[in-house]
Length: 85
Length: 177
Image (cartoon, rainbow over all chains, first blue to last red; front, side, top):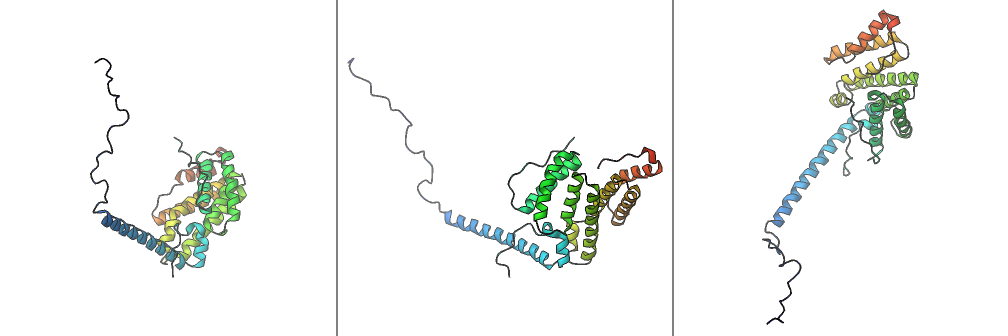
């Protein structure tokens, strides 16, 4: 049968979504991981704040003359903690 | 080999950051490259910032003013401000001695810094034609280094000035270290 045409070849990318294990649902370790990261970030933030507080305390304990001689360049190079009492 | 210039910047966190940047640029062009024309560009900018910023009677602005005067070929001004800087560092050491902040203060302005500033002051005295004061200042720096157990960087300058004092005809104004 000479008239019979061959079916057109499919074009474009083959198949669907690539197989990735775990796709379509959250991992079981997700919430605990988030918790862990949050804890770690909180700890780092606290340490940074403590250091800033210590440096600014040292600066505040200096006599006015010492502060005047050192000038703004002698001030700690970190922002003053906001909730300082 | 020449060291690289501090990288160019156009954005600064704050005024202090910009002053620091201009100070290092000025130091580089004035002392490392000995190019006063380039140094002047930064000196003018630094002078404008310093006049508008607080803390006029602190040590660092005095050092900046001395450098600015030096770049502008104003030797008497450079000497005056460098003398002020040395006086203020000595005062800082005096009032911080025995206090809790002594270590912090020495970390910012140590005896090596004081010796370095004395050497620079001596060079300025020499360039202004006051050889006796230059030698006396270098000897003070040497004594300080010996007392504090640090290395004296001005050995060769002192040697040169002493020879110049011995044979005045051979003396010529010296370039900066």
